[in-house]
Length: 314
Figure (cartoon, rainbow, N blue to C red):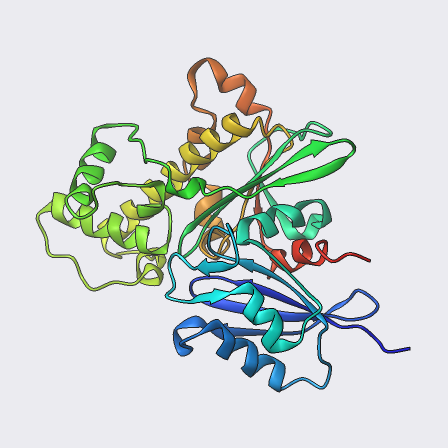
């Protein structure tokens, strides 16, 4: 009997992560590619599959884009492709494609205690909705809701909602960014590029030139570092708390809110002591409701693989 291998792909705007599901269900052959090094998704898949002895017969892809039909245009990456053409080119029997944060939401029931760092108090209500929020190159949002004893996934695009200010300083920062973008979404601040937007705007308020920084520079805090970098991180964590609280209220996510993406795990100690949890709970009459909801940072290397694996039909 021929052994069946299946392809997993977590296609973000900065990294494309690929792996195989072995016949015994184990995830193997994990590799990470820089999307900027490839003109097309097909080229990344070819580079990965060409180095394997096993050839997968079907694929599950989590893609940083809305999945609304056969043609997919990624949002923060220039790749555009046809799902049907991928299936034909690589000889797959089936291809499953979901938004990347739908894949991340699907992973939550399979996370273990060592994959999570709890922030603040609260305990999950059994069988209640779950939310995932993830700042990375963009800002991903998804959720799980219970349905007839199973989980139904919500593939949202919540990172593109309009960003709200909580005080005058945040309003001033939003006004600065609005000169460049007619619509200031949450993603304009709560992402890697958003950290740079925060830093640049804070420098303008301080009347000083902004350095040509990357998100890694902004989050590299040390004694004597640029005070605008430090404040950018403070505001980022606070705004993320407000945004995550909004998502929790919208979904009724009493099963917990899970923070994913590439940014927060890399500055975990700063995040632990930030205003995130206070701002998460700061919702007036609904403070007590939110105090009961647990929030976690997911530190699993590639949680989307766990979610994508569930898409395959046995």
